[in-house]
Amino acid sequence: MGIKTGKPGVWLAMLIWLVSSCGGTQRAAYGEVRQPENRLHRQIDPLLVDLVSDFIPGVSLYIETSGERYYGSAGYADLQTQAPMTSQTLIPSGSAGKKLVGLLAATLHDKQHLNLDEPVLPWVVKYMVGRIQNLETMTLRQLLNHSAGIVEYNDVGELDFIWAQLADEVHRKGNRFALQFVLDQPAYFEPGSGFAYSNSGYVLAGMVIENKLKQPLGELIHEHVLEPLALTETFVKGYDVEADDVASGYFFNMEEPDFILPYRQRYNTKQLIVNTALADAPVASSARDMAKLLKAIIVKEQSVNERIYRNMVGDAHLQTARWLPDFLQGELYYGLGVMVEKYDEGVLYHHGGNEFGYITQSVYLAEQDVAIGLIANCGAQDECDEPVIALTHTLIEYFIADNSD
Figure: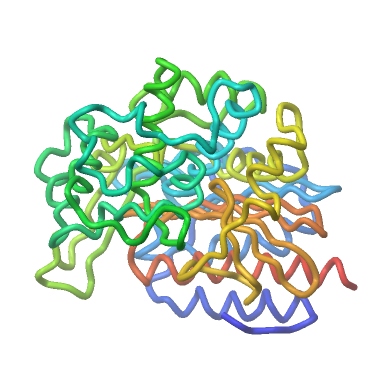
């Protein structure tokens, strides 16, 4: 989306037109105690209400600037019970949760509990050794910055991973479940010689961290990330019971009669996603906590020091990213769970998540000191993804333009 303009009002008017034209828009009450109205509420509240549609049941947005905090929500967390979406609503964060694993690994490295640049082979379960190509030379850093060349588990076979998920929705599935699809598959390239976004890298990294430290990943995330940063609205799937108390997620297959999920039926994906507890999408979170996490990494708050920051997003460790979404047509790089987009006026940090029934966006504009967290309980279909991404894009451009006035 390469639209450019210098006036915030034009951006807001254009987005109202965009989301209203998606069809089936339903007006929804906010259903929560509101803050005193301020500039952001007057400009953004109507956009959230108009975003809700037949394909986007509910949305929650948090924005933190140097002088204001905005909480907003619209629509429903559950269509059956009509429970409203609120600013405290949690959803599975998908790949936006990779920042937590990247921060955990960088923190453990800083505390000398592990080394990001040592081979992971000694900490991989024995039956996988020899069945993951190039395992003997892969490092934890390479797994986390997508330069290890390990095959993406979603790309194996004809939707083999998703079929296996659907075959048993009610039982918990962990890292070993996903890694079974990686075994005996050819690598994309030699470790360190390329870039290919692979969820499998994070799944394997999660297993390695657990095995090396002999602690559950959930316990480590709480001890080294959530508690030091006071992220009280984030919970680890498969570890915290609170992670099950999330909004229902909805997928509406409108285009593919032969697709794996029902055709022209709204499918509730909550049980499917909650019970798939993998290190590539480890948490359920609120919009606020996603925004605060990313900001904490970049501005080095509390437990995040300069060494951790450099390992996560410092230029020396960034990988040139390919085939990943950008917002400002800048040069895109990948650190440890964070995308770094360098554009003419500054640097934008971001990482979203998108899976059946859920979409998340987390953004930090460095020059403007603006953190944005956005969640919606739909995902993996254009009728949901495009308006949500458009809203994120518009908010980014709005704050860039607002800062330059």
